[in-house]
Length: 339
Ligand SMILES: [Zn+2]
Image 1 (cartoon, protein in one colour):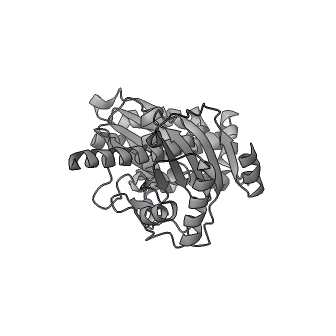
Image 2 (cartoon, rainbow, N blue to C red):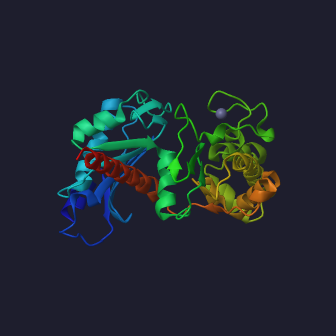
Image 3 (cartoon, rainbow, N blue to C red):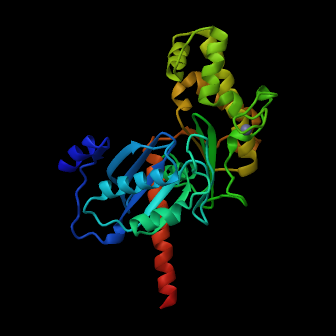
């Protein structure tokens, strides 16, 4: 446990799953998944079966600029891997990510100087390893499809509802990125109850303006006149019968369900998985969401399961690791073609 103690001293937190370390394992059997968020970055060592062997987290130096974030990420991965040989790194990063070029196209205000970062090139240079990158919501979806709620499904719509609202479409087993790497921005679908309201994207009338976690919390504060500071408290109040809390969660769930139902009609998924913090509000949110989905979807889609994500924070790490394995498999296939 000496490494864990050292990490505690430097502000890192680490945990080991206690899985056996197979000394005979091939080097390509272990990769690292990295999740870079606006406040925190997390990393995991993952094997081919999708087992998380070790994890570590540290704060993201969000205001210190691009180099500081990249250096912190590389340090976290070096500390995590220790003496283990890892074959590649997969990264899920906040913002719009062009996965073909490995570049962050645009980012939230929270990450200073992050837009334009050659994430793949810079991390690969620092670590001397192959690196694959994608947006964090796509990584989340890949993780749930590998080992979580969508395991075994080829056509998956994942919606993440938290601080913002994002989505990822996996069709025929592949994440769809669109022509500008923007596919999946489900928070910016119009819904009637958001009409005229400002959205964080700069537009108006989008579902994120009424159904995100901060939107629900603001609604409750406005209507109740109380200074509740966390959505979990609104959920607790709703469970206890508070009529304002019940109404706010119902309206948020209904708006999200309308947007999701509309998307289902376009995408035709086998399963819809909902992750992020807001689904933790429980049945006062889920019941109206399911009713709205049912009201919006075409008859052929009435039996499509709409279920909670099951992997929590591990989903993005597992999905990032899967990106790394996919990269390795492509490289191997190309090498074989050359022979
Ligand atoms: Zn918007």
